[in-house]
Length: 433
Image (cartoon, rainbow, N blue to C red; front, side):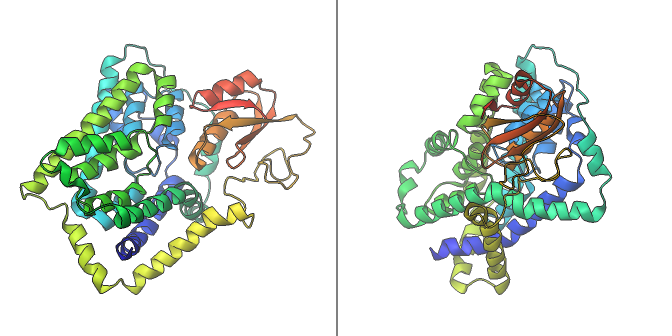
């Protein structure tokens, strides 16, 4: 377990930095900036989608409603598929964490593999899809216009809150699970487990694919698992397959892609992930065993440093990250802090309409407030996408979604059918509470 504690100490400073950079991107880059370049059914839109998606800190559940919103705003199927493949594999936080635990070669190969795999998948979708693309819609821009007029310090505060509260809520649980799994692998998995695959790289890659594809794996949380498996003899190429296929796909995302983009797009999406991960896995193993690049050097260094002990700075970062995780995951469950999805900014209420228990959702003299259940939400990105979709429905004066209870509070004259269509368009389901 000392090795796992050392991994956490190595990871924590880079994670804190990665979360901050992700928060700055969220606050200072307008959402419409991404949609503007993805509308045409062209190779360029596919490349743009991959480039935009790679640094975004979205997990494989949060990327689904975001991608569906892009599609609703007019992005081509190829661009959406490219975005779906590239975004969950990486993120500025996971790239930095990859560098801290797995070294520079992995940190370089991982985003390049995500980019080329996404471009391949998006291009294949465009080639095989014969449907006409809709032109991008303007939608409601009042929220983005409001953000554009916010001051620097307000955006900076928003960035910090997003990084160390919302992202911690979304990713923290999966990061902890990943570290626990890595610890269990280190303790209980035999050191020669993967010796049976020696000389048969394809067999180990296929085994990893069978495990990774249907599971939910966070891009950051999968890193300690990959490291632990490499310490047990898994080849670097097979570890890269885990890092690519695990975050890029899960059973829930398959169902949504099939429903919104069609079966043909789903097949192309899966093929691009499988082919891309195996191809880059083979490349990494070839570079490793030919002596061109040493992808295992960082693991050897970690094992040596583990015996020497970690610096006070690493321990301080680990303690800080632990406190942030407790604040984000534990305190809301104990009722000692309201979850970050509790937004008290409803323009028609004096306080909050998010179901936070303050009695603020009772009675609106202007219009009836209806309560619905939104199924399929797993993180704050999901909640924000559902909230935005409801707010953009004609006739809705206000809409707030609570992640913990899965409830949506909608005020206005829009029909239930209009609201259901808006929610289903981004991959969720709506029903009466």
